[in-house]
Amino acid sequence: MDTGLDYAEIRDAVARICAGYPGAYWRDLEKDAAYPTAFVQALTDSGFLAALIPEEYGGAGLPLRAAAVILETIHASGASASACHAQMYIMGTLLRHGSDAQKTRYLPEIAAGSLRLQAFGVTEPSTGSDTTRLKTRAVRQGDRYVVTGQKVWTSRALQSDLMLLLARTTPIDEVKRKSEGLSVFLVDLTAAAGAGLEIKPLPAMINHNTTEVFMDGLELPLDALVGEEGQGFRYILDGMNAERILLSGEAVGDARYFLRRATEYAKEREVFGRPIGQNQGIAFPLAQALAQTEAADLMARKAAALFDIGEACGPEANMAKLLTSEAAWAAAEACFQAFGGFAFAREYDIERKWRETRLFRTAPISTNMVLAYLAQHVLGLPRSY
Ligand SMILES: Cc1cc2nc3c(=O)[nH]c(=O)nc-3n(C[C@H](O)[C@H](O)[C@H](O)COP(=O)(O)OP(=O)(O)OC[C@H]3O[C@@H](n4cnc5c(N)ncnc54)[C@H](O)[C@@H]3O)c2cc1C
Image (cartoon, rainbow, N blue to C red; front, side, top):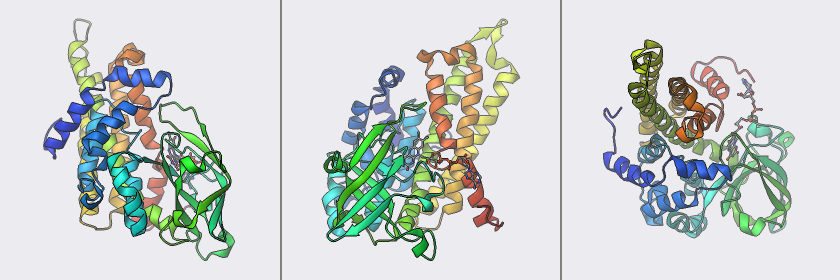
């Protein structure tokens, strides 16, 4: 569905890289829950992972929409950006709120790929979506912070050099609003490993390199704090619109992958003496998913356009995330059904992508929480929680 696609040169270049990493590459990795090191290295070498880092720090300084196109193309090709996409949006917190010293120290190395900022420690096992009630504490003791707590679903912590950590610095009963008193830290994972920090892999339905992170008396230097103490939740929220827009690109890419694979197959596969695509039971769900995908893509483009001119885009970013994840799921289901029993055969890659695209309805924010946001902040309905 190539109508009106923007950034044609970026799409071509990214697609060429992805062509070197076909389905067999991803299937082999999954057997060992391995990290796609070669793929991430190729993307790093091409400069695409540093798309959003300003040129003064060695990146390409491209708009968010261009980064979303990069991720969309990766997913449309059948690959997955999940191993490295976080760098694009985590870096924004450092860029917008970090000190000059932090930016000069880290951003050029991140842009060059010699330092990986891929891990984002927000979610906790006991508090889940209720982020402001998270329990990890960072207590200032003289010239350091001492951190104790636990994170869950911290993706790529074992493959990252740095982790952006959200922890409470002022107890919740001592702040006026529960969103205050949280702070963001940049944790040097290499220095922290075995010195108050332990990371355990968390095997999951998809190869997402997720982990649990345990912190017990982890000492952080004062200059690990990003921005002002107590303002961390605001900083994280700032980055979330970017994250939602970027992941909307991935979901659109997934939808396009499923539509392409399903239509190719539905034209070729003949049963009862005719191509299965001639049956409206196969064709209509695909046509419906196409319409959903194109509409969702428009909302994602609107959100990115607002973001790129510095306008507020919370409703659009959330609607883009909601609509693209639903479109991807509709396309995945229609494709899965079109492939019949072969959808289950690993070598077709449909079941892998189907499992992977299901994540967008749950993370980084689940569908219900998006709907709750829209109901409360856009429609003005009473807060439900
Ligand atoms: C593969 C994977 C990778 C992830 N990577 C990261 C990562 O790198 N860093 C990170 O910090 N987190 C990560 N996450 C965590 C993810 O963001 C959370 O799983 C997600 O935000 C939901 O939190 P939860 O699992 O605790 O669900 P819960 O908060 O327990 O919610 C469970 C269900 O109840 C619903 N629900 C809860 N409260 C309400 C309400 N008030 N109204 C309506 N419905 C409600 C939710 O929508 C959800 O469907 C990852 C998760 C997965 C699965």
